[in-house]
Image (cartoon, rainbow, N blue to C red):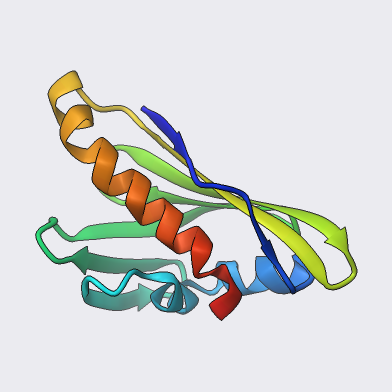
Length: 130
C-alpha cells in the first residue's frame, strides 16, 4: 500500500527542515490533536499513539542530507516506511511531501488506509510548526 500526502510549502530552508526532521523529538510538534501518547525512546526512535489506534514505534532508517528522511516501523508485524522528501525552492522556501509505503493484507489495508492518509496529511500540514 502506497500513500502520499499533498506537497506543502514551508518558509524554511531544506537544510533546516532536514535537521528538524532528523531530530525525532520534533515529530511531537507534527502530530495531530488526537495524540494520546508521544515518547522519545532514544535519538533515533520514538513511540506514539493516537486515540483509538494501537501504539506505533518508529525508528530512523535513512538520512540523505538535505533532501530525504526515512522512518520505519520498529516492529516486523506491520512493516512500513514513512519518507519525507524535501525540495528546495529558494534559500528560505521548501516543499515537503510525505510517502507511506507498507506491506499489508487486503483486509488490514482497507481498515488503515483512511486513518493513515489523514495522519500523513496532518503531519505534512503541520510542517510549518518546526
